[in-house]
Amino acid sequence: MIDHYRSLFSRQQRFEDALCWTVVQPLDEEITVDDLLRWLNGGRDPEKRTMAYPGEEAGEEDLPVLFVYEGEGAWGFLEFSYGFATPDHILTELSKESRVWMTTWHFNGGYTMLHAADGKIRARMRNFIFAEHTCQEGDLSVLAEFRSMLKGLDTEDYRGKRSAAFAFIESSTGMGIEAEWLDVEEAPVYILDNWNEV
Image (cartoon, rainbow, N blue to C red):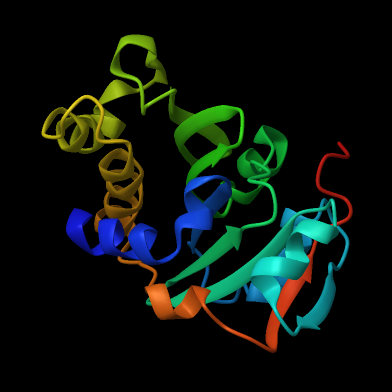
């Protein structure tokens, strides 16, 4: 699975600079993707737009731009404009009726893996790409498999560590992502405008 994502990042190198991958597993079958998008946007409906070249146009927005993916009992939200991390207050709100997993990084670092459930952030690992600077909070057992994946990689295998983050979320949720999903034109995206308001 790590090799799958290693290949993805090799083909889509811009995503190694900045992204946020949030996977939400609703506990109630009646929760819709529109509900989740509204929660992600701080209680308001986000703008839906079609971008001719999303990979290029997203960076012009200066706002979070999301691709949305549906999996078996889960939804994936890929923020790919600047690596805007989903704020903690939104993650905890989402996790009241769902299980939530997130990994994120951006131009200045911020390599984070997080799990939220029952309205709380259960576990977080910061700076996972740099073993000597890793900081862990919460229930360390939640991220035990992720730590094992990281230990199996060379210290400077940064692409491998990013790949491990996606592989870990897929192994935990069943929700993965394919390289061809990222290289699309005339694609629907969602633009969040209320992301950081409490």
